[in-house]
Image (cartoon, rainbow, N blue to C red; front, side):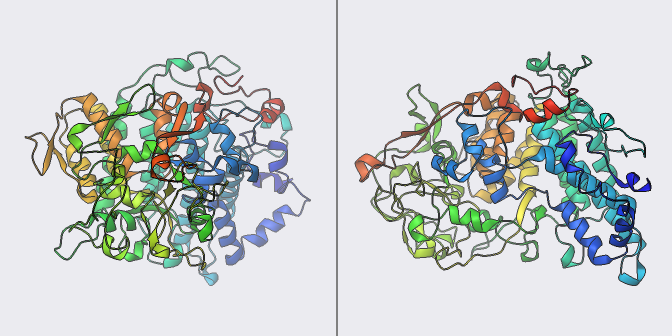
Length: 630
């Protein structure tokens, strides 16, 4: 029947027999599609549904996708697993090919790919309804972007995937035609790379109509491409000999085991092309300035994720207009204040932030988990401050933080840290803006009920939480979910450049742009002084450590950390073992301020890739399970 030509085959085998059912109906399906694509409202609804699988950087990354939880920045109450936080057992080593993942990319993304393909086949101009021929060109290009983006997400999650992006079912197809095996990872990446470049030449860099905010642009295409190519150049998938025996049913390698160092240069070029194009289009790092006209690092870092594009936040490159920040903020707010306050940050993230002089406080850990302190940094992990701390560079302390950076009596671990620390972490004695008081995380106190709804390791996340939020009163401030921003691109660029062209002066230029906005000393190849920290730009290993340290801090709690640990092949070490925090059972200073193991995580080599669900392996004998899952 003619209707068959409209069905994009779910060639990924992803819940194949179920996910195509809603299109495989009676012979009036073609007529139904004709009706849909004669009506502007239905057309826009169809297109909006194709967009709907773009991940939510708030609740999606945190809860059902779990990218935040799988990494080592954000930590939830372990006992929330009873409310179907399916990703929590994964971090405890309870992960098998039969585990159900709420993100469900293997099923959902092919559905959206199919919808985008059907849209491209059927959309046509409707001048009397305001859909011009130029609009049709743009909408088709948007669908091409979505298809490429979703294939990238699939490859980023599962590695090698079944892949035939242009295959449409013939009228006489059999179910056996749908059962295909995986294509090599690099084949998918190469196709997505080319497709995003092609589509970037068609789409505008921005839209003048506010209702189109969040629709695909040329800059979004280049942003996805740049992040994808950084991953593709990294050790996990570029010459990883661990996957030498991972082959399809015909004996073909699904990952390349030969390192190609030119991939780093290719990634660096992609990042620089994006930077140049975005900056020429008016994008820049978001900054706010104090009365003296200098950068206010606190307000800048806080609001770069809270301000909209029409509020002069041109750092945004790719936004999801509707994100569930309400659930995120509720889970970051104490139980006694109307929230479910068990969404914390790890001790290792607390340790990662620099001191206000720009030096790292901790250089590593002893076998017993205690930190190796960098004495030059001025960091102290005992005792308490004897006065309030104020800084002239910001109005944040006065307007947001109760009149000071830290209050007298604050544990010295949290004193004299860089601005990004205070914007990202709520610690005991930090200021609780919504209730105009200080947090009290002692056992039995206002912010620690010592139940599942309490910070299990003595911290709550502050990053991405608006100071205007009052959960108890139901007040939340709208903001988009930022999927990509310019600050990340700078860090992507310097990492790829350090790997491909060590010593290139652009490394310090763009690394220092991030540090300048953060309000800490810049790096220089000259002498160390009050304004600069000396580095040897030609020392690739040193610069690699500095770049990764900056990346951890700048991008904390934004959904990138887990992929970073994966692509660097560090996840099996960093995410395996004891996780520390303060002692949430402690009822006073002496018992609370103790580095305490609150969780023992297990990370196996298999976990670098999500498993193909066993039901799919059983259904399609041409699939092979991902490495180390059998």
